[in-house]
Image (tube, rainbow, N blue to C red; front, side, top):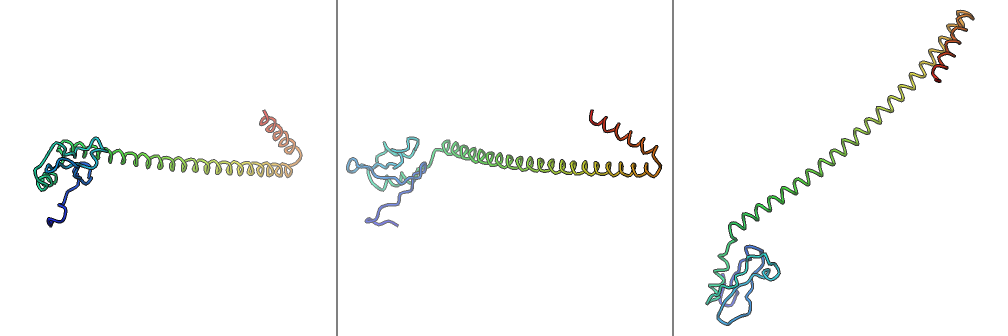
Length: 163
């Protein structure tokens, strides 16, 4: 509640949120201005041009103002578009991160499979050596003729591999 000694309650500007002020002017003529009006050309809160015979009437008129419905609708739509844009940016960043993770996992899987393949190739080579030794031992047991045939076959195989 206000008393004659206390200032009347002034609501902030419904467009920019700034507190209004009383400009200096003609005595007995009350005009209300939005502080942001001078700094913010798009603020529609200026009440300039409206003059009131009493301070109470000027305050009452100021406090009754509401933003134009078209303006608030456009501002709401703009704000919603900004939220959607921010959401899309966040989704894009998240999908890029997921893709990077998936690619990193795939590269790791490929490296692991290649290492396993190399290990298996080494084991196969060891088994081939073991088989050649067993064939040699079998040939020694069978006598010199099969041994010579096995040596010739091994030399032919090596010559073929070198080509």
